[in-house]
Amino acid sequence: MRKILYVLGSLTLVVILALGIGFGVVLYKGHVLDTESKAFVDSAVPAIAADWSKQQFLDRALPELRARAKPEELTALFDHLSQFGPLVKYEGATGEAMMSYRSGAGGTVSASYVARPPCQNGSMTFRVGLMKRDGRWMIHDFHVDPVPGSQTGRGA
Image (cartoon, rainbow, N blue to C red; front, side):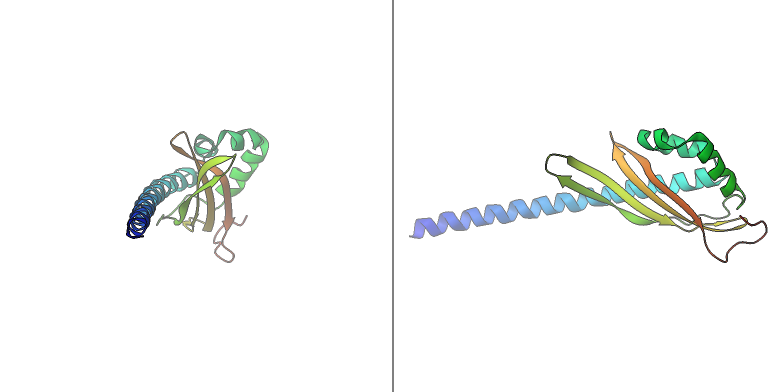
């Protein structure tokens, strides 16, 4: 009986240690992913909004997003956004990275961020969705909306 309790106790200790190490690795990896994805967004938003560059956006977009975006629609969107003028001040985005795993589909690493920088002619809300592929962050979802009541100067 004593031997069985000793074996069960040892197995329980090993399982607890393995879970603790696994949890620590996930926390560390999550922090690294948060840092990387935030740095990506904090460089992408100012680069895109500095002069509302369609090319800066396309350079950072997933291939599927680039293929799905019709050139004339993208040009019209960026022409519309350019009416808000260049970015005045950027103070960073808020959000986080997420890791998920589905049986059969594998693992994915994504992130979601929101930034609200003022532009010359009004404030904007950026909602940026990212995916990490082949060790590289890329935009998979990108929405820019004017903040109601913040427009000054030219209207959209």
